[in-house]
Image 1 (cartoon, rainbow, N blue to C red):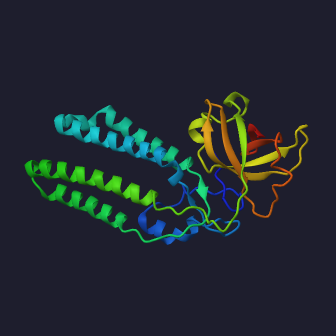
Image 2 (cartoon, rainbow, N blue to C red):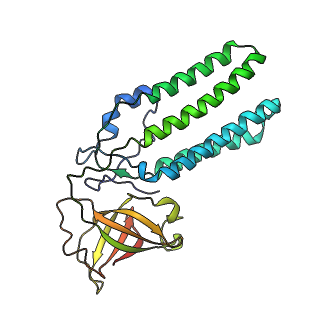
Image 3 (cartoon, one colour):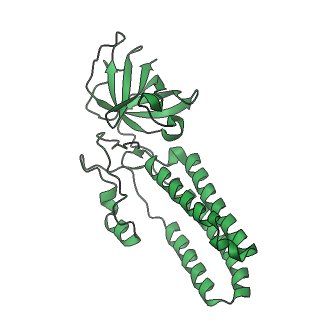
Length: 272
């Protein structure tokens, strides 16, 4: 599991898996969930840069529900089939993977968005009509509402995840081009790094000079503009997370660095 980190100070961001996820609880701790417990600065999940991956996840979920619904109409006994159970297990896995692989960006301006209220309204209307209508009308109305609900979900996702503001331009960050080789899992690396490591991901790094002599303590770096050559090699840019650390002696051509996750060395890179 990747240990996601604050884009301001590099400290680990605690997962919210064990916290109540109902609407009231989430609204009550809205500010808390987006504030680093270490530096007290705000951050947000950087889904905008990874929109294609998120859209793919949403399409998979919609496809499963759509297939479930259509087959249930054609074959009434299909609701009790093994496929349904496996579908919900797959949905849970997809949701968990999506939750654990989204990196974070610096603070942002939040604006009011009423699309979530529209989505919830359509959802509850669909349930109400489903309960009060007879079977014949229910089938016709439910098909129409199903299409509307799917369209509402797509609109909601698009508006929600394209409204994220870009990083504060008042903070100047120096970046440098690097090449990175990710270790395979047998050597302590990540499983499928090309799938799991996204733009904006933050890792602790230790820098070395061209003679492989350590020249820094552990510093957190953010990976941007990832361009994968194969499953375990990529080119990208890196920048230091901490603003009070100078890159002058670190970002030098032919200097090397190691990346870590949960105290395990997972990759080595070289500055171009």
